[in-house]
Length: 247
Image 1 (cartoon, rainbow, N blue to C red):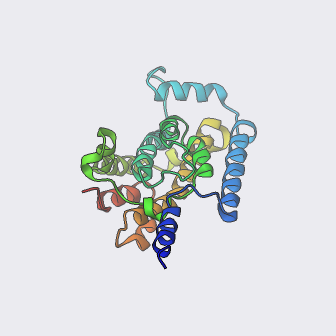
Image 2 (cartoon, rainbow, N blue to C red):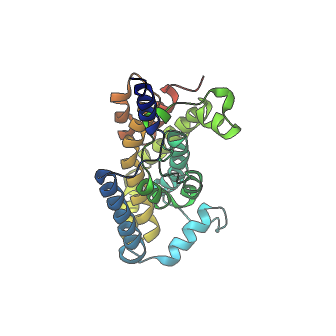
Image 3 (cartoon, rainbow, N blue to C red):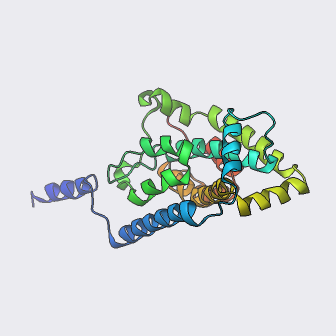
């Protein structure tokens, strides 16, 4: 009878050990890997590419290097700037709840996502596996580094919410001609086309990661948290304002 406590302790410790992927996790990983390869192949080989020189001018203008006479469609201008907001939202939502049991580091993928969007994040999603339940807990606030404190604060989501409302308002009030111009550019321009697909995919993945983060933080409203992810930009920013924080 004396050996029973040892068995119980060993069983409790098993949850802390890296566990191999089960069949479901493997299937999801393979599926996400194939999705990443498919959209990468589509983006560089099959997507519209009728205006490569105009795309170059657009990119130079958007990063401040192009001619001041180059006009950017206001809908796409808003979308391009939105693609800078999304990586910041992902950085706050994925840290620390999306740390992987497979020990794949998250930071490099997040850093690359500011330039490559979902093309940088999808490989991490494919390699990710959830942590054991015993490791799903927020560290004390006193143990957070400067970056993590910034990601946990309410200042960042407040700024992101303000930027999101402004950019969505810009696109919403751009007018019929601007939207018709954007649709035409979507059909002709690889830059506009791929950026739009990037936006859609980043939006589509957020409900899952919000639900994962809410469960990690043991939020009482975690069952409904994912619905905020269905509202592009604004929903995730509101979630970040409301979620529990390190104490």
